Image (cartoon, rainbow, N blue to C red; front, side, top):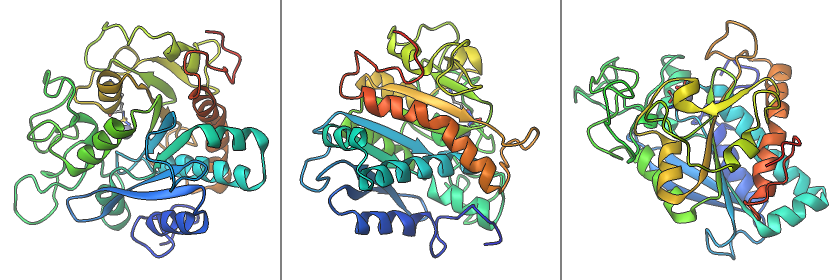
Length: 326
Ligand code: 0X9
Ligand code: ZN
């Protein structure tokens, strides 16, 4: 595809193929689940990672959901999440005792590409595409009038105001015709409701933040849950080095119909939106195609991801990986 590191969804050896391959090679540790289909018919895939994955019903063990690439152009989120998935599997296979214990007690869920249509479109057509590929105006082709923002379509404060999401079909934050109207939203909401995870990390880019609910209104207290601070850290000691933790509406801007607001409100999930970095200053959404920079971004986030997995068995007593006390 012309890139050193980045891989599309559809290509041979791409992200979809890889998920099937991981499931095939690790039958006792993983289970692949198709949780929906996009507008253009692509599978939306979740991979469960836990000991005896195919023998235990989904959601039996305390769960953590690592999701990425709701926004098509945010490729670094796919890659960081993909490397996290591999890290757990590799450590299991290498007999890392902590990881073995963790994966006996906990189920980790990975949705590497929550918006496969949009993601593929950024490889084939337009690198900076953000939304899904709903044909808003029904003209049979994709133009700037099309697409719904998957992170404005959730059934939580949907359409609350015109600031946090838009009614205009051509807007980058078009919310769609109705709450959870989009197949991508239904897939993610359905998974959240089914497994009711203790934690979610919904990877985005860019800006180096660790955002958490509520996002729909400035000044709205978060879920009043000290776990948000315990796991994201503080300005002085953030859980991801160099990142800025805080309530999403205060730190960044308001949104409505947002994923983590839904996860928190509907199921009590402690849900974060980490916004990854740019790789090099000024790269913005176009993180460089550079193995070292990509690997460094992943390694920076690993303590945070591990903290969620470790804490899932005892969410009220997080074993703070960066030494943040509750
Ligand atoms: O706007 C979004 O959906 C996220 N930022 S991005 O640049 N990746 O598009 C942020 C969502 C976090 N929630 C709030 N800021 N309320
Ligand atoms: Zn995003």
